[in-house]
Image: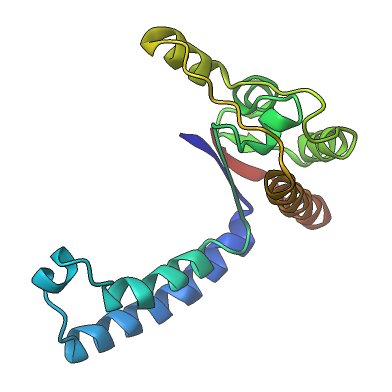
Length: 172
């Protein structure tokens, strides 16, 4: 579970271009593969995964941002919630307007990581249903570095949307 945010003009173009690379790689793999299901079952890494996984990551590297609803959630670690503050600003087609992109950019720029932590309501409900399982993770240097990179990536996506005067599609 998480929030998936798309700047469609950039995402779609990149996705289609990389899909061509994936199709070519799959064709080449089918012709040259000597790997069997038994090899994979015996713990060998699949050459297919070695080839395709980086391409799938590349396919989602432009015009896209993902924030899972867990202790590594950027918005949660900024004291915000995708399903509360952001969701209420979406239009009927799940689009975040340019004005609301400006609002979100200002909000994330004015907040410090870890100063206030918020849990997504759906996660809190799951914890209450299945027992009070702690989803918090200490803010160590590695986690802070990860969240700083996520904050920069989201800020860049929001800035691109503002400059292009394009709403963001949000699957929350």
